[in-house]
Amino acid sequence: MELKFILEALLFSAQKPLSTKELKDIFATAPEHAEGNETARGLKKVKESELESALEQLSREHADANRSYRLVCVAGSWQFVTQPDYAPWLKALVGHKIRPPRLSQPSLETLAIIAYRQPITRAQVDAVRGVDSSGVIRALLGRDLVAESGRLETVGRPILYATTAEFLRQFGLANLAELPPLDLPDPKVMGNA
Image (cartoon, rainbow, N blue to C red; front, side, top):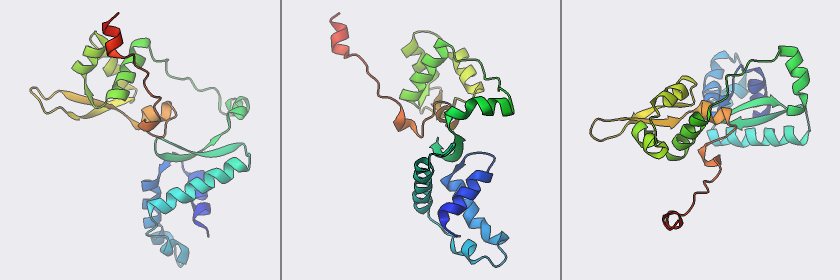
């Protein structure tokens, strides 16, 4: 059995996206369930780099096949997703999910500040926004878009906030490096205005 086909079977059967670490753990425990399957024993110590390579090859093959679904990596986890063109039929099949309310302008503003400057304290967010952000940060915590990521080593040890894997998933990013570049005005120019 080829590694990529084992991965395809795992991801097809999984109820959630799987990271390469989770997949590596599955390969490590598979021999316990193998009963004479030499392939399972042979792949027990598969490297994450081998998994990534096989997943990328599988993703390309599915894209080249122009199927109704594709393999994608979002927020560091792999999953099969359907092509957007098939949405009307899928909605008819499963019903239209009620989406959580859209993020308000203050929520989007706060989320952007946290995403680009993380880890960051609430006071630092307040300083950028010019208003109290505690309610907005609580709402973002409740939606699992940000999380506490430690404490700043200073007087009072304020909580630091950072974005989560759910943030990456909802915004369709594989990692934070995919955030669009900030196009900030030159502070020297603004001072002369």
